[in-house]
Length: 264
Image (cartoon, rainbow, N blue to C red):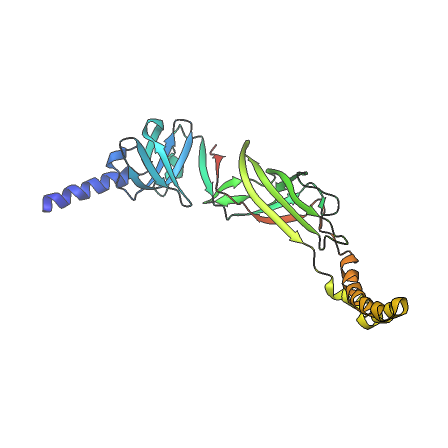
């Protein structure tokens, strides 16, 4: 028993000393923090959760990354100072950005429910950098683009104005990534202020109807009077939704993004 414990202890010390240095994949305990460098230069860091003859699986936080063994150029345990002993082949770090990550987007394109239409192109840029585990995954100034997906102006019949946008592309570190960042806003209701503008109540309509056509006219006039109030509400155009150039929107990314952040 003592010999077995000694063997385990020695193995543990050997693995601990291997932190930051290349090791045999099959000797590293599942659950260890590891660095996997692919032949294309991508560095994948996280917790080793499984391995097979063909694939190594690493938990990188928001998701699990599967790396084919044939694509691995370097494999090592991650220590506290591992960042100083990265594999020579590592050129960029693969960083996973959760779909719920907030993006501060400054509009470069002014849009309005009164003047924009569906499929109108829109552009913007990231205001605040997105940092994950100390790595700048998305730098400030990164470009985003998309389209207007809905634009309804305030009108007599259409009701309140509405504007909808979707940013579907992000360019970071020279590479494009799909987005699904959406914005939607409906203009506030003007029902209260419109109601205050109604000057002729139903009884007024009845009086007008009586003058026009007697008793029958009075009945029609009463309905018209009530309807006239409704008509006034509908024909009072409310405000439009307008976003000027330079407006900053805080939107969720809408989908998981994997970016390549340069290491050197």
